[in-house]
Image (tube, rainbow, N blue to C red):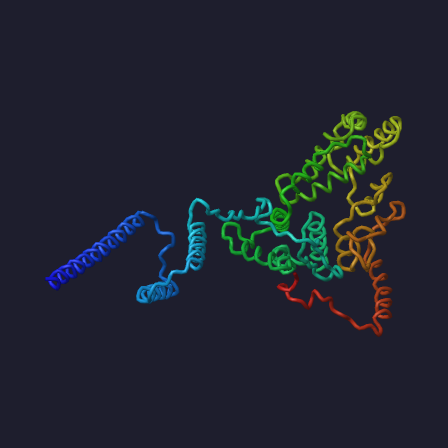
Length: 425
């Protein structure tokens, strides 16, 4: 009896333990599923990537979890607290990195500002230089910052060279192309040479210089030249005023604003001072001041008192009724009363060009050109017409002096004549 009761109590106890274990397992499964359901609604804290490092990390974590599941659990409160703190720091840092609201984009870079006036301009820090050893050598324009004075010097140097060498006008522009140094100039030459609407072969020298100024000068150069060109005399002396206006007019050669001699005379008449204009109108009632030469001559002779102006005006008006002679001897007579010698005739120009002369001081076989002349114009009282005999006499002395100076001297070419255009910078 006692054995049967003990057996029944043992079976009941085993049944209770089985039920409790099953209930514990079911409750643990239920709680695990509940935890999964609670975390299912949370967003992913870390992005999913395809890197191999992440796969290795996941595999190592899974293997470690499986090994920890199989190993017996040992409870250590200190280690658990440290793990919780490290996990919290990892979660916080990952959440900060992946949060869109805390992300600050990098500032956008703005492109450098380039003024429109200098976008297509060739600018350099150094001033351009015109190199010419003598009138018999073609000038060379070295690259740099171009100014109106540089282009005027380039123009004068080439005009003297063309005159000395007697080069035909048809090849003036093409010859000047070889004197423009630097990659930027060469690129511009290729560009305009390929233009079919305005062939370079049809360009005149004045048109070429106008295009050169329009391309390489600053945008306000034309405004400054026109401002000087249209200025009035004011209180300035007549010589200074007319020289400034005419110099500005020379910068406009090849452009619509350029004035010929007749237009320049009218231009100066409109802008002369009131006192001079009053006397000028009195003298011009007969209409004899019909050229720019007559205007200059009248002003040169009538810059004194009013009485002197009246007397000189009457003398000039009387002499103007006579026929103007055209011989060379009359040129000196026409210059009487003036401070400048008479204008050079074509024969005199040919002699100066043939015998390396200066067109300003009218001297044969000089070492300078008109733009570099320091002697100035010859005295009007002692000036006489140039002849071939004078040129031959000066040439003999020049050749003797040249042979004595050249003895024992070794000639050297300038560096610019040996360098290539691409290495000019």
